[in-house]
Amino acid sequence: MNLRFETAVDADGQILYCYVDGAGADSPTLRVYPGDELKLTLANDLPPVHTGHPHRSEGAVCGGNGPMTSSTTNLHFHGMSIAPSCHQDDVLRTLIQPGDAPFEYRIRIPENQPPGLYWYHPHAHGFTEPQVLGGASGALIVEGIERVRPRVAGLPERVLILRDQRVAGKSEAGEETGPGKDISLNYVPVLFPLYFPAEMPVRPRQREFWRVLNAAADTYFNLQLRFGPNIHDVPSPQRLDLVALDGVAVGAAASNVDHVLLPPGARAEFIVTTPGLGVFGQLVTLDYDTGPDGEATPYRVIANIRSRRDASPSADVIPSVSAGRAAPFRGLLSLTPARERKLYFSEDLKDPAHPKYFITVEGHTPHVFRIDFAKPDLVAVQGTVEDWIIENRAREAHNFHIHQLHFQLLERAGEKVDEPALRDTVALPPWDGKDAYPSVKLRMDFRNPEIVGTFVYHCHILEHEDGGMMGSIRVIPPR
Image (cartoon, rainbow, N blue to C red; front, side, top):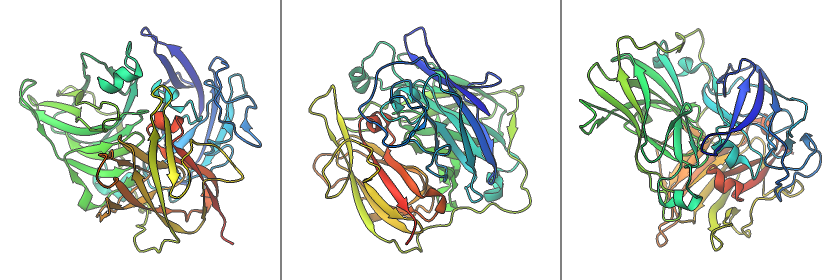
């Protein structure tokens, strides 16, 4: 697979970014099987610029040797349990500069990688948000979900990618107090102020398997499917048969829902039944309160769903159940954690033009992200599991993500939860300024020997990550 990383400016002055493959397709969906080797070359065709970032990679650089600028890029394979090393899933030292020879990624998909929906996007610190806001993202599917959840076998598949972008003509402050970011569905824009939805023609009363990726830089999607007799009546929420979150199949207890909250970076896979002829359907995102210091996330219709007998069938169909079964992630509840840690999100907004965002280990002094390969923020031992308590001490929502591994949600606000699903991304609501800090307790899985090395954890609201809300962890071999 050969990709070129390109940029353009649209009629409204928005800077766009895109991955283009050898056939000219934009941001192709990559499909792999457990055990495959993915070879991907990335050519950085951006024009060189000289706007740098105070962050510098220390020591040997993988890729070009130039400074980190807004034209520097790399790739992160979000959710994949692969090595944080050069030519695999390293985002700290891999710097691909304009004019460099095409950079080759060589990735072995683990045999035990759960089949499901993952994604790829750039992760050059300080410049991740503008590149992702510009559209630089694509889906990555590990095949075999039908062997874990046979009820999806034979169903038509839809891959739906949600993105966001700046509102033309509005400042960032204007977005936060007004409409939030503009959004799109598979690059079909749903723009302020008219919000004309995308159109989704479907065959009537057909069960379909939808794989939805929130590839937005900063925007939450609280997804709901609604049906009604016509566009003028309030449509009713529909039940969704939830199959997987963040690439990992969920249990039966979590499968029957009427909405799914997807913070930036998260994914959901579910079965829907399309509306019958004469029934009006909509895919919407509900209003989500990100707090007094957060960005507006209003109710919006993403797509109108039109049932037609002559609608084209989906090009992709989940295979019938094949011999054998994929090995799903095993739950972590029975394992004894090696230690417990507490980390917290906080902010310094005294200078609104230059806000600072922190994720801090309890007992340490808050600081914006800095790479110190000699002294990472945390050190963990491969082969162990740990319990992490993450608190939100800010008056806006945050969203915890860690590279290379999944975790299990144990508690919310100190109360145990029955959510056996494993995730790589979890949302924390804003602090109300007076009561206990919102928190989650997570069991972190450091058992995979492939993840030995240094990688990062951060808020996946990319404005916050670029603004410093990121830390580094080194996983070391057992002694």
